[in-house]
Image (cartoon, rainbow, N blue to C red):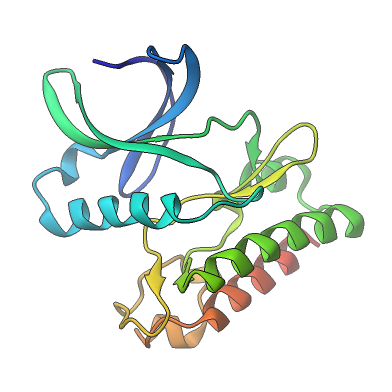
Length: 196
């Protein structure tokens, strides 16, 4: 394999993320693998591939960069994988769990960075549809990056009712209305409120 898996970083509904070393370039990367229990689900496999393609089209300092989409064999099983920029930091969820409330200045900084990332996505005809503290990364030097475009949709694309994270979803998204940029604006607003 072209990657050496070093340690587990996180786990979500669709994938498992590891810190890995990309041998050909001798650099540390994040490796997101389709979750083992999702391998036989064609719908999840398609969404996983779609996330990689969506992220690969976006180039922005506040969006986690995708380097490649591959198939990787781990523990004898071959799964779809995405090689991404490794971020040294914490999720906003972790920060809020530790601090409970952030200062207005830090809230404005994080909010403006995420808004800028969303503007880039929206100009590329994509709605993130899952903006929340767990999908926002903050580095020790104050960089802010939006990640996890796993349920992103094209603007106007029909949605599945209730797909997303309940506390951050607009009523239109809960009802499965077509994807609109307003859904991301609503979720960012809910996130800002939680930060304060």
